[in-house]
Amino acid sequence: MGAVGLLYVGAVLFLNGMMLLGKVEPRATAIFNLFVGALQVVTPTVLIIANLSRPAEILGASGIYLFGFTYLYVGINLLGGFDSTGVGYFSLFVAVMAIGYAYANFQLLGDPAFGVIWLYWSYLWFLFFVLLGLKHEQITRYTGWVTAIQGWVTAAIPAFMILTGYWRNTSLIAVILAVFGLVVFIGLWPLTRGREPAAAAPSPGDEAVGAREHRHRPRWT
Image 1 (spheres, one colour):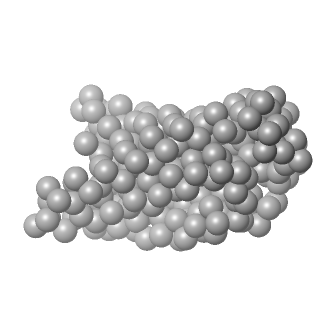
Image 2 (cartoon, helix red, strand yellow; image 1 turned 120 degrees about the vertical axis):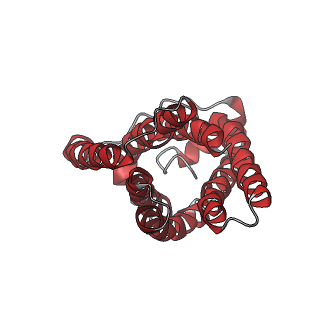
């Protein structure tokens, strides 16, 4: 069941990345964030209830809430037009906790591939903190690309591999992911640094709430 939820995490990360790159109007992504956020709250709840006597399963499921609450928070922010600071500082909390879950996957759960994936998520959520919490808008384009890529590499593809039975030899997968992440995310930095994406065309509803006044803010405000 967790793999099913992870598949749609890939979709929402890809969509949010496109939003940060100015390809999708921000409010248009809100409903899907709410859908996936709700799924990522229901899924770990069911998994925990079904595995009350299995601490390792509970540990694995507990981290899913971090993302469920993120997407719900983002969806509500987008619909309500609230300031992004709250999402940003919650993202810092997620980034720190993700390091703990990476350690748990390496040392306790025996899945080094997901250990690396949790480090990916820690890095991504730290970028959200810098962008949305600290308001460093110059990394908007970089964060958008990292978000969209991680949607595929850390969620959609691993989920599909798990569902089809190809999630094997996790040590090799961990090495591939580590090398890929270092090369791609370091390489993206000079290519995207300081380049702002073109703003998506505002909808009539956005104009009604004064969206034009916020055109140059991070796209999750």
